Image (tube, rainbow, N blue to C red):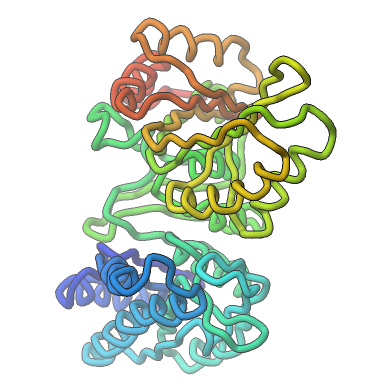
Amino acid sequence: MALVVQKYGGTSVGDVERIANVARRVAKRHAEGDNVVVVVSAMSGHTDNLINMANSITERPEPREMDVLMSTGEQVTIALLAITLRNMGIPARSFTGSQIKVVTDSAHTRARISDVETGGIKGTLANGEVAVVAGFQGVDPSGNITTLGRGGSDTSAVAIAAALGADSCEIYTDVDGVYTTDPNLCPKARKLDKISYDEMLELASVGAKVLQIRSVEFAKKYGVPIHVRSSFNENEGTWVVEEDDSMEQVIVSGIAYDRKEAKVSVKGVPDKPGIVAKIFGALSEENIVVDVIVQDIGEGGKASLTFTVPQTDLSKTLDVIKPVADELEAEEISANKEIAKISIVGVGMRSHAGVAAKMFKVLAAEGVNILMISTSEIKVSCVIEEKYTELAVRVLHDAFGLEGPAPNIE
């Protein structure tokens, strides 16, 4: 008898018929004798509708109230799924994030999980019931409802799996697994049988939409195997697991892109210690995540600083930066939303030279100008003009041989 946590995303529970499909899957697993915990998202489009309603009132709704509002989406889903399971003769009990408790910090709309209390879930399982848990949400030490940010249900599921010591965490979505790149952009993309935690972390961090990055962080830290698979068929998906020797033989495992970043430049700031800390310290205090950073040294003791942030945080970023820039007597602040970040990822980069050079050469041959570069041990990212996104993904996918059948590695 296994203990499994299953997570179903918004498209998998998009209407009552799809919720019934999920219930049949859960019922089958329960009938096989496994203990099942189900974590669900809000129905597809529901959270966006709630956000749009709030934004129709004000451009900047108060974050605490946004969490109260957005958390209602998952509450609808858990109730409907529990009702459906019970109607099928499967005992089930629903839980909100605050009921079980998923304890988080107080960073509203982007909270981080600090603890998961498992007593309620374990009691439910011991009674032979299916536990149906609302993803994406938790509660802070003061009792305020919090949410974990977009894709937060993945994080909820893996955190609960880790706290329970589950045998695996199955992430059900509308695709068959993790692909070498987005199949919508590159029809030649190939589904991967398995991928390492580190590769998945990098892909998630640079735009791959299959898993939220914090869910992979939890999985790696606590050794939770993740199985990414479709909720619309029985096909084997992709396993996200510990790295093994065979993985290093593949130089590049995947290509990701992100069109939802913006580039901010602060030009003509003093070139002396403490300036960069002052700028990014102000952004950190507002919980604004900064990605790629480039600093150029100009003339006359002046420097220019360019960095990327999520487009959703651009307005807030400029508001935060302006008084700091005025204090530093910066010459100019500019922003550009028409960018994209293209990244190649693979643990094989550790042992193969010339990977970055090949990427740059391929892009140059297509006339794609590189605006910024960021690297890690197993990743190379380039910021380019947004209009070249699809072209860049396709030529890099071909250049690194990611199309066709998987390589046969002994």
